[in-house]
Length: 362
Figure 1 (cartoon, rainbow, N blue to C red):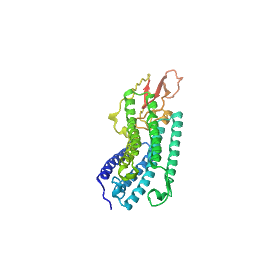
Figure 2: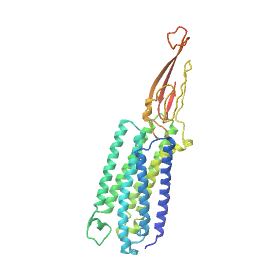
Figure 3: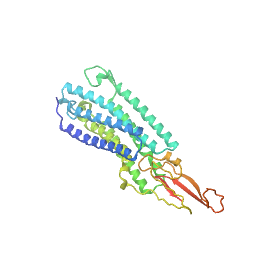
């Protein structure tokens, strides 16, 4: 059995560290959901699926570098190792083609929980539909790239295959375009929110980490052209490495907006709250929690349905409402406002709920 060569060992070490960090990010995401008492959504479940696929790719990489000869010169490998290389290569393609759309749709589904305006919802629904449709098409194409499919990994089988590099490059170009679209989607929404510019910058900084994912996607296109069919097992090294780096960083970035809420010291104040009460003793209590927005004497605010389930509690649009309560303090024991000796106290509260919670109370 072939041993793990130094290039393979280096690659496995790098990818193992990245997968470990990704797993930690997912664990922190779960902890943040429980701590904030926010229900798991489809974005979270897609994140869990992505983590499982990432583990599968790590296992494939380990096999690829041991029994598959990845990182070694093709001339030094026997036929059994070459057959293993081809089989694992095909399995890795299927896993990758499932993993990338899962991460992308997870991020978009998170956006849909955060920004609830109809226009944004329609845009993201269309984008998710495009990604899922493309993923289905590319997976079918992957299964049909060689006829018979056995000829993909066994050169002794007579078959017809379409150009591998063209197939992979076309898919990667699509990934790059979608990555930039996903990166740009939340930026206008964030900057239109009524929050302090420092807080907007911090939020954009979280999303801007996705720039590295875009870079990884572009660089992967470059290294795909480095593959030499005459020595595939050796020249595929960089392509293999970046095939694992790209989704690992993508999964980490998809978790950052959620786990950022675990570190309140990193936040900037998003606004101020002012309270002004009229003459009277009406006891009002206002909670600015993202999961509760109500007065002790009034009903739950209808605006809570629009709050962002991201830990910063940003609203996709501000909402203003007025609550009025009249309390009578009569001269006798009957609550009659027309009582000659009674005192009527009228309390009005205007609430503007924007980025984080109650923006102002007058």
